[in-house]
Length: 167
Image (cartoon, rainbow, N blue to C red; front, side, top):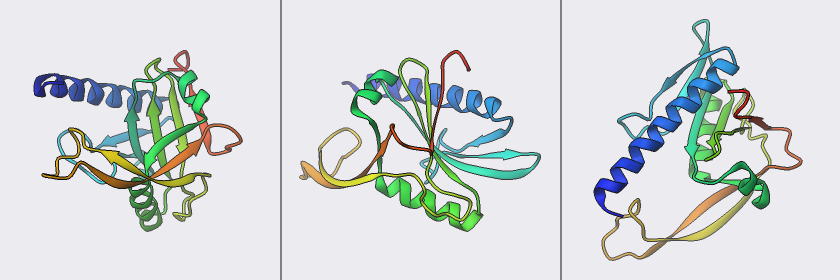
C-alpha cells in the first residue's frame, strides 16, 4: 500500500471514528471531546454531560462486520491501551470504554473500568509477536512482542451494541 493510500485510509478511519462517537454520544445524551484528530493522545476522548466528565474512551474502526467479531467472540485491543485508560479512569473517577465501529456500521461498546478505575470487563491477556508493518517502523527489527487483551462478546455484562438502526 502506497503512502497516499495509507493516508486516504487513515483519513477515512478518522471520519468513521468521529461519526461513530457523535452517534454514540447522541444515544447516551451526552457530548464528547475527540482528541484523536491531529495528535497521538493516550486516549481518544472524553464524554461529558452538563459540564461534568462522565467517561473516557478509546475508539477503533475495523474493516470487519459484527458477525465476524461474533464468530471470533472477541475484540482485540492493546493491553497497554487498557492500562493507560484504567489509570486515567482511576485518577479522574469516571469509567473507561473501548468502542469499536464495525464495517457494517454497528458500534460495540465495552465498559472496561468502573468509576474507581477498577477493571470490570473480562479479558484474556496474551503476548503475541507483531510482524513489521507500516505502524511499526523500527530499523532492522522485523517483529516485536505485544501484549493484547481479547475482550469477549459473550457472557459479558460490560458489553453493549448500538445497531445501525439505532444510530
